[in-house]
Length: 177
Image 1 (tube, rainbow, N blue to C red):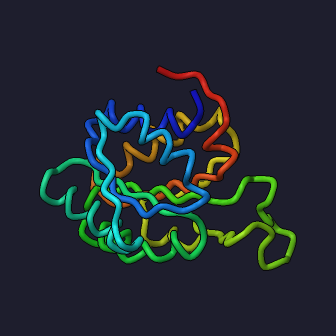
Image 2: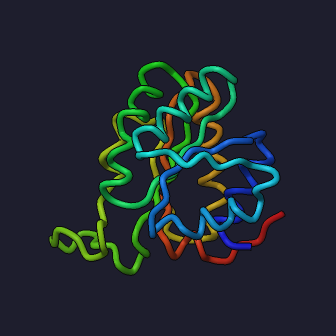
């Protein structure tokens, strides 16, 4: 199993039955994993990323369950910030999942604007409107990251979390199930 499949399995095991998303190139492995489990988790494709985040927020408000949305990298992820901020201010359990360029294409601290296509440092951009935001850089830490994100979103004063999911980490092998 890869990390994208692990995440879908985790969501299903935690009673997530619906996710909202806007397709894009750097979130394809996660979308493929959702498709493989389409009888267990329904994907609602939205017209834009902002709508995805607000739909996840609305589901969480009405059901009491975790609302989940996904976007692609860069500006696609930025477009969903309003929904994350709403979840933060109102204490609503929402998990955002944004695709990103592979880890070897990320600029790090090189001083250049970007290396990968539409690469953006999303984690630092949302740190003040989420309970937790992280970009996993290896498969080994992924289960702990996902568990922590879920627990923070759904316990105490609930709120939004963001997993910035690099393309190569989505495809990286991991033990699971």
